[in-house]
Structure formats: structure tokens, C-alpha cells
Image (cartoon, rainbow, N blue to C red; front, top):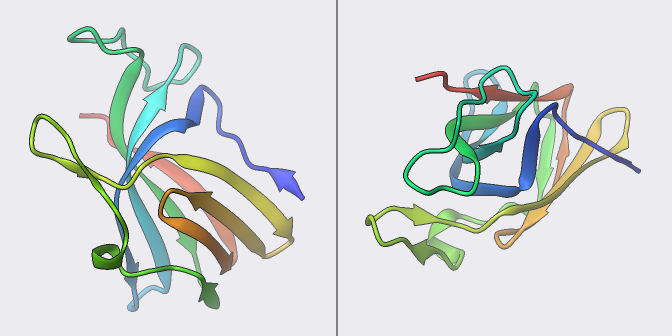
Length: 125
């Protein structure tokens, strides 16, 4: 079991904003508020008293063959933030179980994804 990391990204401090499965291209997408640190090419100094730099991004599982354990968002406990936004907690871990099976877990549960690859995209806006 190999822990998946991304340069300058703290997934344990990244917030899950939602998720969906795109049937047309067979990909599972987690929308995130990503915690970025110096060394990540998208890092900028923290604003508004934030702990670190946070930017929107997506955790994408490509060419998904099967998903086990993913609950519908409306059945998962969420947090209502002061600004009115909703999040589903943090990503506690992301690990590779085999060449084509990844496990991601957090407050939303534990999900096993049989797919070709996993990647993180940062919205540089």
C-alpha cells in the first residue's frame, strides 16, 4: 500500500466540497479546497489570515472501472461554514492498493476506486 502525495499539497488539510461521477468519460471527481505549500507551482502567500494558501481544485480518477463505498452526498454529514459554503471534511488519506486500485478516505467514508490513474488539478484563478 503506497501513500499518494502531490508536491506542495497537504491533502489532510484540504476540504472536500463535493463529488460526482462523469459517466461520459468514466471519471470520478472530488471538488476540493486544496491546501498548498511553498514548493507547489500554484502557491501564493496566504490571504485573510488563512493558515496557508488554499485554491480550488479537483482530485480526478480517470477511466474508472468500478467504485466501492461512495455514498451520495445527501447522505453524508457536512459542515456549514460561516461564509455559507458546505464541506464534507478533509481527505484523511489517499493510497494506491495495487496497480489500478486506489483508496481515498475521510469524513465522507472510505472509497475504493478501480481505475487507470489518479491526478490532482489546481484551478489557477
